[in-house]
Structures are given as structure tokens and as C-alpha cells.
Length: 485
Ligand SMILES: Cc1ncc(COP(=O)(O)O)c(C=O)c1O
Image 1 (cartoon, rainbow, N blue to C red):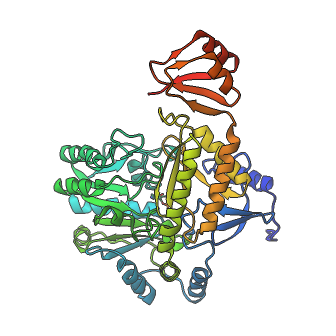
Image 2: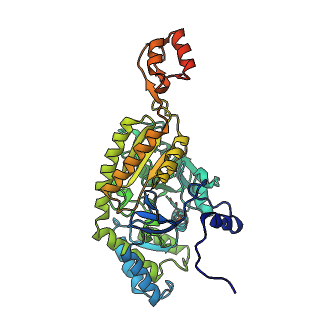
Image 3: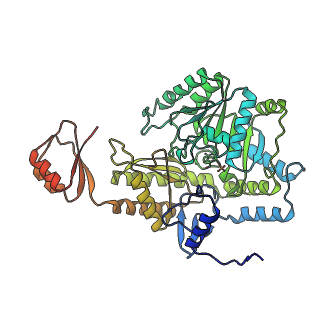
């Protein structure tokens, strides 16, 4: 008989069992010393020894880990009935009505699925059925899911991608290190690439997150989506907003990320936050697109999608967001945190950029703020130190140098303070020897000797004159000269 006793295995034992029975494609956070989390509440997680961690990573536990209202809604419905959408059920229509009420017209038709990948996969199928075209434009570095279609439209390097003739990639509209950095004109400049792609190809859809998560917590430049949507629609394509990470009030000013850009997509996909960890997701589209799909004879059925339990959970999530004012909290606490992080940026040259909106924030780390040379090692070191001191944060972006902050939406001002203090401690402990920037055009020996115990590099202007004795002193003290761009 199988031993079902609930003994708690040690972390090494669990790792050993994972190695035996699970694919090694499944990665853990902090691989050199993985975390064994056994419980969680609100914005905190607890390991097997009862140690508390501030969770700055988890945008799935959107309204807070194990929110009692959500847990109760799921458990009560589970104990009464769980079945599929082939039977009539009040929960399904109540939830569809409630969810579509958060959307602008004409987005009013729901498809319920179980994951973000399924949602994006279906969204592409809808777009193809509606337009008769096949090609899909997506942004470099994006991740839209794990199905075959989603892999074709995702170029996120960690999960590989399956680039083929149907996938067209465009540059990340990044105003920090991208080709266009002028905040006034970047939206239009980046959209131009899409205008050309849409004109030269037979495009079914443009898919994009409303702020780019895996691509490095990038906030879209003003006017980007409105320009892109216009170009794509002009050439017969439809526009899909992937709201898996940006929806449900996270951006603070608006309930949906696309609203921050003043656009209305043709199809919206959502997951993660929608069920606070319960496996559910949705696609919402217009009656016109739905009608095209019906004409193809498609019958869509998803065994667990839209079941009475997930609808009850989804409704409870919406109730909590509204009743606890979590969107407003994201705006308030997110704004406060951004301000504190910008103060931190002024103290540490490794913090190249602080960007974000609401509780969707990124800190891009660089070796030098002039050359923007990325600092993935520093990002790793900072995240390890934070973990050691009880704060969980993740790293992302195409250069692996962006600290991502997207905590549960019940994150408080005190949590923001703790995060910033811990970050300051981590940056302060990295290396006490700092970079030294000088506009000096003449560097002599005494300057180097005066500075060399505290610095590791001296950045000088391109035409600076460095005396031979200054060079000797620098070599002796292992100080490097670097030229500013
Ligand atoms: C933006 C975005 N879209 C889609 C997905 C896929 O969602 P899921 O993992 O629920 O399939 C993810 C997952 O991380 C995501 O971040």
C-alpha cells in the first residue's frame, strides 16, 4: 500500500525526488539553494522553518496569497458542484457579465480557458479565422506562452522559441537602451517598423503586452499602441492585448493595461491574476470577430475552462479588488516605491534605470550609466542577497539585468520601505570600491593616489590627458581608466 503519511521532507530530499521524477527543464528560483515554501498569506511567504519572506515576485497571488474570500468561494462551489460549460450554470453567465463590464465596448464575448498560453493560442486562432491571414507580429523578447503557436510568437530566450515564416518580430520599444530614446517621438518611431511589416506581409494580428514584462519591465512609450493599432488595422490585421501580467488594476491608473495607452484592442487575453492562483484564464473579443469564427464552423470546448468553481473564484477576485481598493493601492504604493527607488538610483551608479507604473516596476542594472553595459552578475548578486535577508525579487529582460517588482496588490508602504532598505543594503555591500566619473581633462598622479582606495575605475572624457605617473599609480592600485561615450 502506498504510504500517504504527511511527513515533511527536507529540501535536499525534495530536490533529489524532483531530479528522479521531474524533467530537468523545470527550473527553480535560487538554484544553488532553492527555497522550500510551505505557506503564504497576503504579501508574505513562509519557508519550512517558519521564516518570513516579503514576496515582490508574485503577480499570480494578485489579491494576496490565500485570500480567505477567494479560498472560501472556491471551496464552497467545489463542495457543491464542479462540471463543464455544456450545462447551464448561473456562475458562468454572472461571471462573464461581471468580467465584460470591466471592458470597453465592443469587447463583450468571453471564451474561458485554463492558462495564459491557451488564451493566447486561442486569440491567434480567432485572429486568423477573422482575417484569413496567418502572420503574427510580436515584440522581441516577449513571452506569450508555451503552446506551439505561442512559441512561434515568443522570442523570450529562456524558453526557446520556434521562429518561422508566420512570426514577424519587431524591436522592443525601449526608450532606455533602444534605437529611439526621445520620449516625445519614440512611440511613433517604433511604430514605423510595424507599419512596414504590416504593409509587406499578410498579417493576422499584432500581439503585445500593455507593458512588457519578460522583455524587461518596459513601459510602452506614449502613443505607441495607438499608432501600431492604426497601422495593423489599416492592413487588415487585428490587435491583441496580452493582459496576463498587466491586467486587473496592476498599473494603478486603469483596470486594464491597454487603457494606459488609450486604445481598445480587438482581442484581450488574461490569466494569472484572474484566479489568484486558481488555474483559469480568458479571452474576450468583439461580436464581429466571434461571428467570423462561428462562420468557420468552429465549436470551441474546454473541459475545465469556465467551470462553476473557476467562475466563483474569478468573481471573488473581482470583488476583493474592488472592495479593498487594490487598484488605488497599486497607484499609491507603486508611486511611493518608484520615488524611493529613484532616490536609491541617485546613490548607486549600478542602477541605470528605474521604470514602471503602479505595482509593475523594473530596475535595470548596468556596469556604467554612460555605456549602459548590462550587469547581469550584479542583478544575480543583489537578488541572492535580498533572498538571504528575507525579500524575494526576480530577474528578467533580454540581458538578464532587470530586477522585476510585481508583488501581490496588497503590498503596503511599509513593504516598499523594507524592499528599498534591503536593496540599499545589497547595493552598499556589493563592492565598497565605486566607479569615479570625472570630467577632468588632465588626470595626475596625486588624484589617483587620493582616490584609489575607494574606487575601481575612473571614467574620463575622450580627449583627457592622463599623465604617465597617473597611469603607473592607477596600475599599482588596480584602478582602470575608462572612456566616457
Ligand atoms: C505575458 C504572458 N503571457 C502569457 C503567459 C502564459 O501564461 P501561462 O503560464 O498561464 O500559460 C505568461 C506566463 O508567464 C505571460 O507572462
